[in-house]
Amino acid sequence: MRRVARPVAIDLIVRRAPADRKISHIVTDRHCRPFVDERNRATLPFDHIAFHPSESAISRCMRKLRGVRRIWRIIDFNPVIWESKLMALHSRFSEAVGLLGWFAVVFAAAAVGALASIEARAFYAQLVQPSWAPPGYVFGPVWSVLYALMGVSAGMIWRQRHEKNAATALVLFVVQLCVNALWSWLFFVWHSGAWAFVDVLALLALIATVIGAFWSVHRLAAVLMLPYFAWVCFAAMLTWAVWQRNPGVL
Image (cartoon, rainbow, N blue to C red):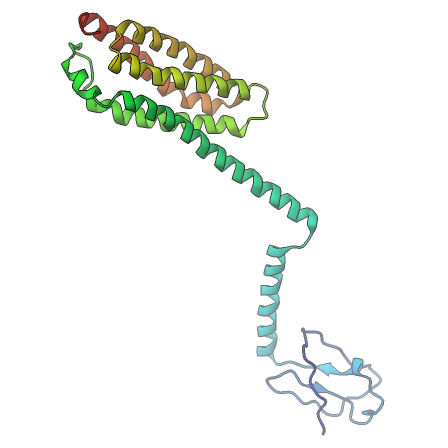
């Protein structure tokens, strides 16, 4: 029997011959080969050629088909779906950039304060301190953790920047960062205990205001500011105590 040439692609399309035509020979092997009606070879159109792939060929084709479907789901050329995906990607990217940006703002303020604290440990050791004053090496790690919490808190508010009070809350946050950085210069560089105490009281008031503004936008962001508020309360008491014990220096 003369075999009919195989098509380029089969794609698992199995066509069956009409019921009124008898199939005299079936030629199959591990490849997909057609079988035809020998008696009606001249009149049998191509649409009536049936393909009988072996089981292993079917398995291979099914695996390829599943892979193509996965790729098609990933690509998905529907413009509406692609637009929503791009918008979601843009939103995530802007949130990540905003979080990194607020971390940069917070640690820039920390760097400004750190410039005034280069000789802070030696100066702090010379002062007469209360018995409950912590050693100088404690302040660096504590402030690093607090600045990180502040960056996360501000980033959360940035994600909700379209809320009513978000812009006001972020402005107050930046103002309190400036007042925070100013304290180090007043205390360690200019040795002004009175103005440093005034500054830390103003800082406490600003932090309380920021916490209230954050609460109206994102409650977790406000909660993350509470350790900062508690530490500044302790810093205010320490500033007062050290200032009163060192009248000739501060």
